[in-house]
Structures are given as C-alpha cells and as structure tokens.
Image 1 (cartoon, rainbow, N blue to C red):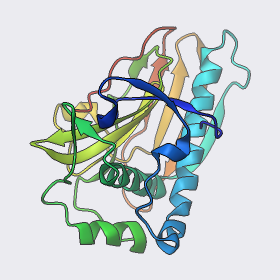
Image 2: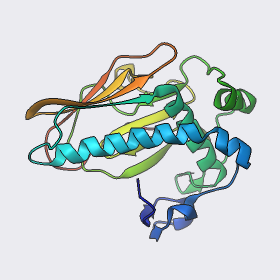
Image 3: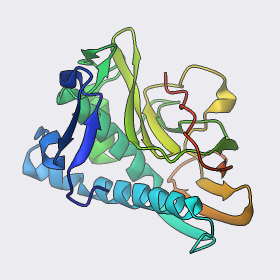
Length: 233
C-alpha cells in the first residue's frame, strides 16, 4: 500500500519509543529461500487485493459524497488466512514484534511448526478454532481514519496470533479462540461489509472459503474521528 514510498514506522522493539521514516525494504527479513518464497507469492497477491480494497472502501466513505457507491471485491479467504500466518511468523523471526517493550521470540508452545508448514505449503489443515478472525465485534460502529497496524497477541510470553488493522477494519490470525465474549469475534466471516450511517450503499469484501465459514461482519461508519481500539489482547 505504500507504493514504494517511505513509511512512518513506530512500535518496533528497537525503536524504544522513537518514530522513523523507512523504506519498505528496511522492514524485510529474508528467512525463506527463493523457491519457498515464490511458492507463497499467491498469498501476497490475496493480501494486496484485500487491503487495497479495504483502504479504497474507507477512502470513499470518508468523502462527503461517495464517488463509487456500492462496491464488491472477492478474495480467497484461505490464502488471506495463510498470509496472516506467514506475516506473524516472519515478523517474529525478524524480531519485529514486541510485548511490553520486549521482542516476542516464541510461538504458542502447542503450535506444531511441522503442522503449520504443512498448512502453509501443502494445503494442510489447522486445529479446530485456529485461523482468521475479525478483530472487532459484528455490527461495530466506527469513525476512524486509522493507520496500518500489526498487533501481536501474547500470552505468558508466547505468540498466540497477530492482528492486522487497515484503518478501522482489522483481521487476525489466532492459535486458538481469542479470549473474551465469543460475540465479539467471528471466525472466517463470509464477507466484511462496510456501511455508512447516512447512505444505503454497502462496500463488500467477500471471502471465499473451501470449508465452513461464519456469518458476515458489518461495520457502519458514523463520522470523522479516531477508531476505537480493537480487542486484540
């Protein structure tokens, strides 16, 4: 989404509270060989479609008059879910995730790396309750302009997942059902619907899943302001 322009970065463990302007290349960690990296390139394509669509939808909704009205985009949900795992695993390996000022170095102890690799590269399956979740309650009102953020889910020093927020919309990969009221999380939603309180049109990002999926999640924009924090911990 940066279109090769430098981006403002904060929150990395090594920044110690500072803010830096960095090229995207400075945030990369080469932890895969070329063959395995190429094998996962379709996941990057799905993520690009997802977040560009969500960003475009929200930019339209911030305007007094929506230029495009009702819109629809379709993405492979399984690929997006795998991309989230690739992201959090790579970010942890690069030392880019922190909790209370300290780098996060370990995945959840019950997470089998062999099984996760099988899921990433060979269309394997995940344990029940693991995978992609919406990072907010269904039918949540929002008003934020937001940023792009990655929030680790840490429990007893172990990484249980990570949430990725694009403006007011967030998705996350979790090694197990997130804590809290189940009504506030939806696993593998069939679609993400962005609405405006003052207009009838919907912006819809549909997620295609091979297996079972959850109900749609609707978020309604109510005006300008700052996004409510997602319940990611």
